[in-house]
Image (cartoon, rainbow, N blue to C red):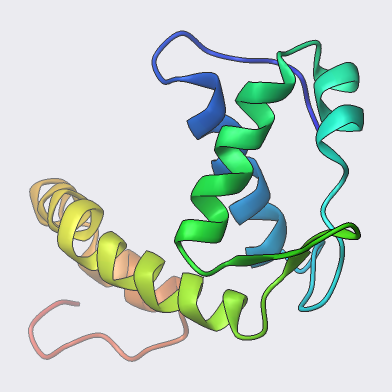
Length: 124
């Protein structure tokens, strides 16, 4: 995992988001083990408690499960759960701004053309 951190968000949250991205990108799949707390802390040069807090958040969200004495593993259905949540968040938070920008710049016909869709009547 990349050890570059920004100051806009707590490190544990950034670490949690990186694990989420790895699950969404299929770099971590159902049943795969997460890197150990100790190895992430050492590689990233952060406190093990910070890693544990990020992992615990993933457990609380049912994305990761603890297996006592063995480690933490990606839960069954984690990717589907994440996709559902991320899609809803995108449509609620980001899409309205993107749609407004598309309309403001008059990009409708160009976007439809780039997607292979026919232009709407009167857009030629």
